[in-house]
Amino acid sequence: MKLATWNVNSLNVRLPHVLEWLDGQPQDEAVDVLVLQETKLTDDKFPAQAFIDKGYEISFFGQKTYNGVAIISKHPLSDIHKNIVGFEDDMARVISAKVLGVRVIGAYFPNGQSPESDKFAYKMRWLDALTLWVRELSKQAEPLALMGDFNITWDDLDVWDPVELADTIHCTEQERAHFKNLLDLELFDAFRHLHPSEKKFSWWDYREAAFRRNKGLRIDHILLSKSLQHQVQACEIDKEPRKKERPSDHAPVWVKLQR
DNA sequence: ATGACTCCCAGTGGGAGA
Image (cartoon, rainbow, N blue to C red; front, side, top):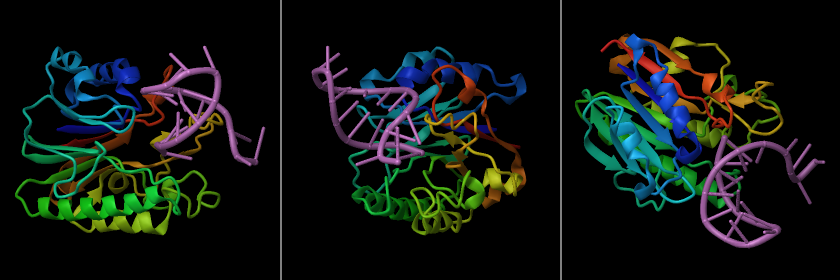
């Protein structure tokens, strides 16, 4: 079973990249479930047919200009939730479904802008609500896969310049404390589990030739229930799509489970 | 360097992202 997450920064622009990436997976390693963030499309504009034509089941939840999330799956989706259950939110940030016996959550965490801003306060409230909801979900029988653009670095290994970026957005103690609260719900970071000391990033700024100079952050994550830990075979950040013309600023991240 | 790039909605500029 292969799960993946990708912040596409506009599915309108990136649809060809997504289809090409799915088609380009090794034959015995097709993606079973892909969650997308920042589709930036209302549901009436979602390119559903492009995925249906390739045999995917899809569920999506979007809005104009900002946010927007989707699940693209080779297998039936059930028990679909949109946004955090129990949290009023006017932004389309979360979509969740059961697939192949796993509770998959695709999430676009708030950016937060800067620690002083109202948006940061919203990020903290949103993280509190997510943690409460995931705690409830973790009591159910199915293992969890919480995937998406977390907009949080776990530690300095996730940051190209931890000194220059100390205490800035994505790198504050408050954000990292919330990340730890999520991991404390019997979850683990799949990439870090397999690559304990690798400095690899999933996002690079469009400016300053940041990708070429590898000035990036690791903010896109796959958290799995610890009950799945012995099944994890591989987890990688695929930089290839970031090298293409008109790329997303994020790279897809995938995990392969023996399941 | 209060920037840089890209997307969107707008409408010949401005907000947001990270």
